[in-house]
Image 1: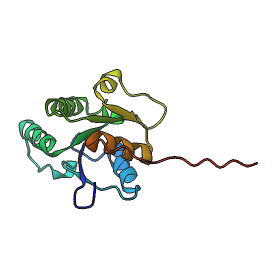
Image 2 (image 1 turned 90 degrees about the vertical axis):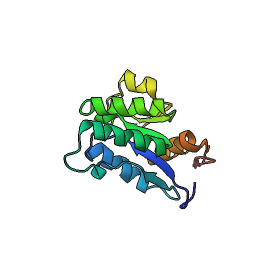
Image 3 (image 1 turned 135 degrees about the vertical axis):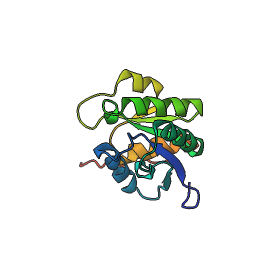
Length: 149
């Protein structure tokens, strides 16, 4: 992954940039040397577009995407769209990275079963999961622990 070859992602949304959607991209932007392209931002939807046209746009975007990031906190509000996006990812053999809800709640079992990997709200964890699922790129990252003696 380089600046000239970014990872092409699609993040779940209900055709609007809600708090969790914006938070996801804040986390991704806070990483260093991580290049991605969002293949279907919610702002890309023209006014007056029908549900069938939106579904076609999701399917077209999924052809370009290397993976789908499902934000589980959106599931209650945008269940129909998330189910469609998950189905599109599975139909195109795209891995799914599930982001747990922000806060103490857990993701629904229906979402967990469809995910290749589940992560919390942590920029390093998100980056590592995206790299691994999109390009099978295992990070060589390690934590340094300082001990006081």
